[in-house]
Image (cartoon, rainbow, N blue to C red):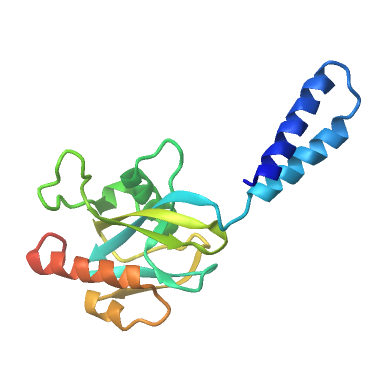
Amino acid sequence: MSTAGIEKLRAALYRIKLDLEGSKRTSEITSDIIEVLDATQNTKSRVAFSSSIFCVNAGHILLIKHNLLGLWLPLGGELEIWESPQEAALREAMEEAGYSDEEIAFPNLKGTAFCEPAGFIGYEEHTAGPKGTHLNFCFVAQVAHRNVKGDGTWSEHKWLLPEDVQGLHFTTSNVQYSARQIGELIKKGSVK
């Protein structure tokens, strides 16, 4: 927020204090606060934590065509305030594809140290269209089946071999990189 915006917010808050003491400028104060809050909603400065989950079944990776962005992506979304990144990834797979928690298994990778949750394959940052910047935790999970049910956030889905993701149009380099990692995990037998 700019210095001018902060000063305007301070002035509005001061007027609220006066209003509580009997001032009659409630609508002016409310308008000032709304204007300042609207100005702070600049998507270029918005940053949020997110998780993505690469669902794997029989050596194939699920990608969905995101309606808003028009890109082929894994399931995912922003963390709720009470969630860990892994919990958010699990929730997103349940919400966006209709899986139950019993149908999703996060593999134990790299010996999973005390600070690294099962299925964690990396961290990346990306622009998420009008949502600003996402600080994203990437997970891989084995899923019990390929019968996915869309929730309206995506229009199409594909189950692809990791090497097929590399030539896919309308995806991102982050997704291609993660697919290469997952391909290596499949070769090692860590994910099936």
